[in-house]
Length: 121
Image (cartoon, rainbow, N blue to C red; front, side, top):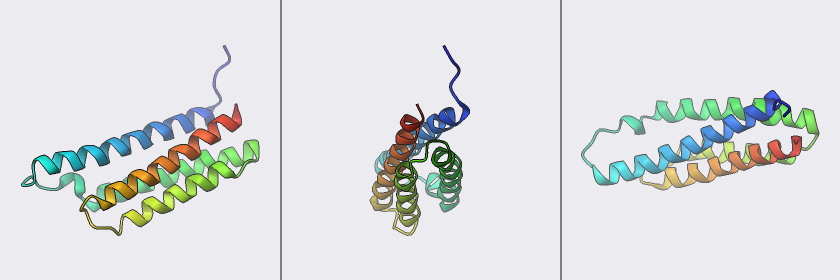
């Protein structure tokens, strides 16, 4: 069995991080719906800004490397659209709308990484 290229593993890690982001969004919404009086540590804007920064970093490296390797820009464009949706979600209120829009953006980013991974294989 040949070892997987580093860039393919990078896309897999980006997909895992996307899944963790979705889990965070859903778990936070459920948690605060059950315990409305609990402080909003996970709703801290800094938490979301750092997460978006990591998503942009992984997207730029993984998807950019994919375009240079296999020449297909579509995965990068889909991932960039998802990052833009996530960025736009930061400006929405914390009433559930932000989480739904963020999850949609994360799904687009994960789709871009999956398409990137498949194009390389």
